[in-house]
Length: 266
Ligand SMILES: [Zn+2]
View 1 (tube, rainbow, N blue to C red):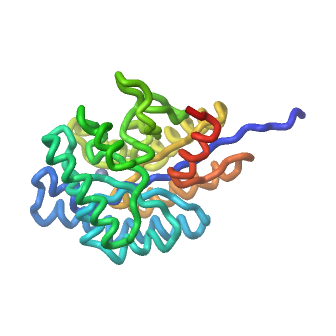
View 2: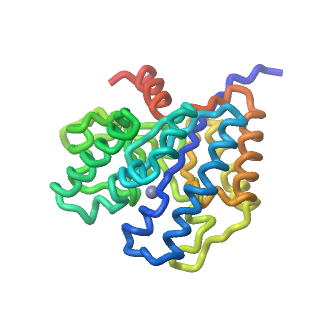
């Protein structure tokens, strides 16, 4: 038997939005608010317990307002060794913001992390999975090292370029397929509320591809979505499946980016 030198980097990422994603859409009545609070009260503790059980470090992208509203929870995320990333201040799409407003969102987000956790995030994920024409220049100005809102690859990190050439920013690509929200929640066209078995099948297929091509497998999840009991159990089964492959390494995003930069010097 030829020995296998396959390997794969797994990035488990969680967007801890609590109420902020509903608030940004103006859904501030009690039920949508309680759905966000469920993520903080139930979903996040379940996710943190799972990660601790498997000794896995993950990356949590958190809006500044959530950092300020739930200081104890984000401190617990930090104390458990996970990475914290910038996710805007109020979870408003950068496309809806002027240059000054987008700049202020970034500034206030960084200030929240500084005040509550004394950390400066190295990475950013857009609350709307989209960037404005000003975003990349602002990321450079604020010294961000990586970004995770684009879909230009599946299993490979890549450099973000613009007309002036290399921006110095590394992209950790995302995909709707690899997001829990569109599978599990009720979305506009009526889809959603999928069984965990269906999502497991989709995610395993993608992982198999990342492993086959010795690439990166990045999942985007939300504590208020993946935190339901059978979904957390499905994630655990997926972790066990991935762990069953030689050469699979779970990482936080900034570590994966640093390793990639070493192998891919500018
Ligand atoms: Zn979000």
